[in-house]
Image 1 (tube, rainbow, N blue to C red):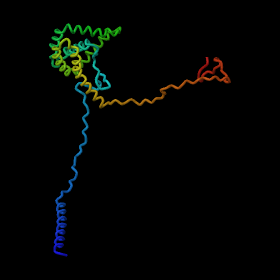
Image 2 (image 1 turned 180 degrees about the horizontal axis):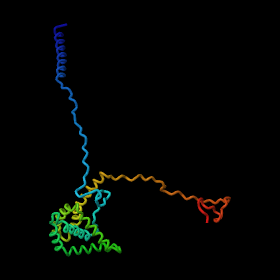
Image 3 (image 1 turned 30 degrees about the vertical axis):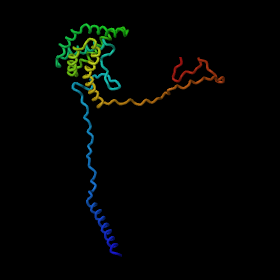
Image 4 (image 1 turned 135 degrees about the vertical axis):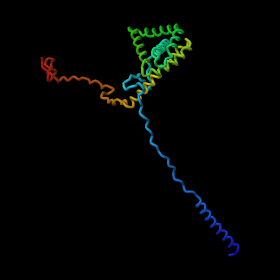
Length: 257
């Protein structure tokens, strides 16, 4: 072996040894894989049960609900006259009942009646025609009964404070409404006046649904087919004797006369 070959082999040996050392050095510098981060799990907090609103009790009246959960208001949106006169009725209830719940309604209400007396009379007559045109013999009595239900709705004492707060706002607004815009305003205003009552009903019904959930009715098991069977066709049998009516045997347990 010549001197050159010996030198080459020596360099290769150093290269191999150096590579191994570098690998060992890098391995010694690598960090261990950290354990997975601990994320504490918290059990979901069950919301507190609903509470009855102030003034509510289990058997208090609430308006009927539609399938979508909204409530049916006490007024009928049948015509412009109905909307305007029903707004007048709701604000009349506020004028009569809100002095002890913040006031601020009577003066504005009376001023509105004086400044809009002609248009209010016209809409009242239109509202009466709605009832008369039903053709009912007792339409006047039905009208009076509906007015009583209407007044009773807005007179509910547990919601009076919230209703009076809403009525004060509507009294301030209606004074600036023109006669032409009054029907549209009346419909929107009635919805705003209804809201405190519906909020109260929703809270009461939430309490009822929590403690006394409605159970679904039992499943109906059909015992009669949808399509009735074909009637049997009577066939005459000449060989079978037919007893005359007077000779028919009396039913068991019956006393022949």
